[in-house]
Amino acid sequence: MNLVPLFCATALSLSVSADAGNPIITDVFTADPAALVHDGRVYLYTGHDEAEVDKPGYVMNEWLVFSSDDMVDWKAEGSPLSLDDFEWANVHAWAGHAIERDGKFYWYITAWEEARGEFGIGVAVSDSPTGPFKDALGKPLVTSDLTENPMNYEDRRILWDDIDPAAYIDEDGQAYLFWGNTNCYWAKLKDSMVELDGEIHQIELPDFVEAPYIHRKGGLYYLTYSKGFPERTAYATSESLEGPWEYRGVIKQLAGNCNTNHQAVVEFKGRDYFIYHNGGLRTGGSFRRSVCVDYLRYGEDGSILPILPTEEGVVSADEPLER
Image (tube, rainbow, N blue to C red; front, side, top):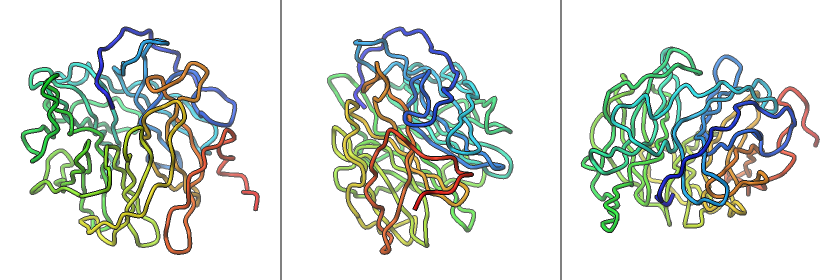
């Protein structure tokens, strides 16, 4: 992401179009998706792009939640979390990721902290996947003084490599947090889910930019991420979350009129889905993005087959797939 001045914008309606196809949300601009499955529903967590038409810049003040029981019809659950919920955060409600543990839901977010002059990763907690969420710490969980090689844009005094968190809980119950811009970081989380446990590590990945995301399939761990700029989606695999990671290539090309790619992967009712954003709405673009969903498929060797974005999207998870 490029940090540029903010502009005021009027929030759009949070209703959801009943029409199937991509983008899946058409009445509000959504970006940076994350998803989890809970009690037979998929919960989609997104950022909210509010930039005005023809005024470049990321204007993001809150996060949104949607839910679905079939991956086609999405219910708007409102905005259970915003910058106002973090006393330390000033602007830039950027990418986040939600995860459930022991009946509580933890939402890791990116925001700008004016006091430090940098981006930080915060965490909010709720008893429900739709909130309300509250700041679990009263301060960022991750700041640049914890990481070895912070990206420092001295001309604008920006520290912003601590963005785009993604959490994962392994089969043995150990939780991990991945994040980064230019540098890809990971660390273990304590059982509380609001404290790092031990040292912070780095992963060397070709042209890593941002948006790390972890999922597992068939005994392999998959780390998808945004590569280069404008961004493509690439991935690596490993037999352990702690590596080593083997780079496997690009799976999704440029998102048309949108400079960024940011993905989530979810398995629901026996099908694998790739969730991403583009600038596909009529007045969309790099700062007015929209979430889409297509199928994720694997080769016999465990490779991820190229993601081919479609206008049609997916069919109801309760309907049979055409063969």
